[in-house]
View 1 (cartoon, rainbow, N blue to C red):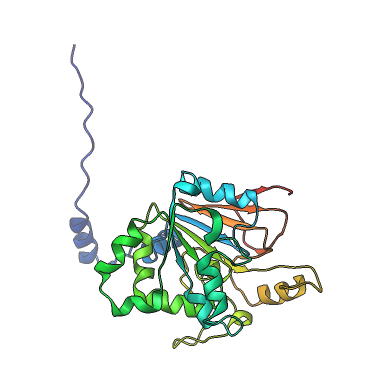
View 2: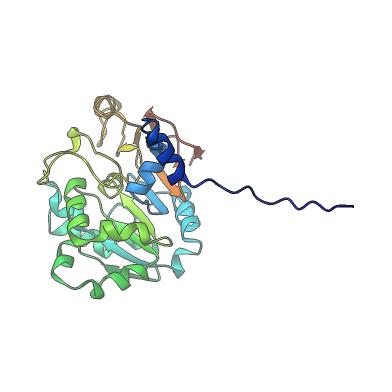
Length: 279
């Protein structure tokens, strides 16, 4: 009995195929790359993000943070980044920066009980060698990023080199507060422009494909009303979300999950997974 061995078919040399087409006067079209694949090639994304409006304000968001870390907060090291505060006219350098760094801010971030906390000041990084700060960032479990001005933060993330480093930090968690979350989006919308960068527009890092309006609040309360959020969303061409200070968006390995207490408004686009709880 003959035994037949199945062998893999040999692939034709594409150069021979292209040459044959050329002889016939046919110019082959370049292969189309799906838009999603194009984006992933152009802008590598960090793997673990927790994008908040008001910080780690409830146990649901805290549990989501612990899940991203893969270990207790008490066993995790942190670096806080206060840079965005300096660019906002209502914050600036001074008391608010100190409150954030010292863990005395009303927005829970630094004072959660970390194993250790350091400060990463982006405006200082261009004046020192990468060997002084890159190993520190790589060895840190979480980056805690203050609110303030998202465009100012974006500018200094690029100037310092942190924006280029982020995609390689596969085990580091980025926790953003307000502007610290908005900086990861494609654009913030003209309504949020305070400090204007040299480029002059409202574009940010684009490491996620949706925009965020933080601090959604009831009419007459401090924050952004639903009417203001709707006006903002009308100027955003892509997916857009408005969220209150008890809501966060978690991104892990490309999966987006809304962690909320029913304080989210979705204007366009869609979210792949939603997990809500009522406090």
